[in-house]
Length: 187
Image (cartoon, rainbow, N blue to C red; front, side):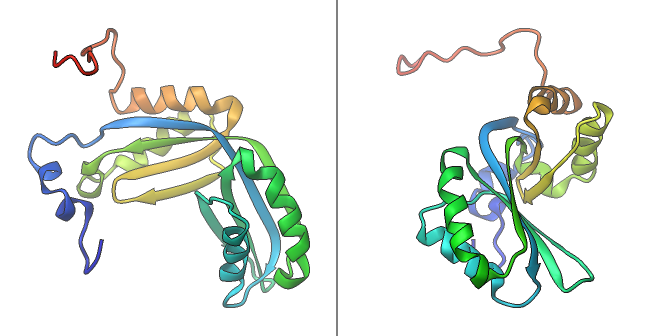
């Protein structure tokens, strides 16, 4: 997307009156959360961190940076669990360069994502998403959003319940299968 274009500009057929506000819910059990604690709060540190990880072939998904009044920040990100063992030595080797105090690895997380092209133009979607999780006492560890999705990282033991809660909150539950697709048969 360039020059202020949105997903709706690129895919105008998704903006019609019959386009759904919410298309579905997805989840991912294969993520690990990594948090660097007390990273110096100065320009370029995040660029250094993510360059080191990119050069090591690490794929990054969600990213959160939280500032502190102490001149440091915490940077948390997720990556495929299959790469978690690779990232620890990379970070240990880069500790002096990056200047962080410690690193925490949490493999007991999962991601639930709500997807829909109508999210950009309908208020209350985010509130409903987080209220559904809150009502089920599900703690949110990280948040990532775009024009067409909201993702929350939750404890892995709460992931199935989070998916059910989001499905119910957005009336995506079905008592029966509504459509059957026979791949490649044309029917």
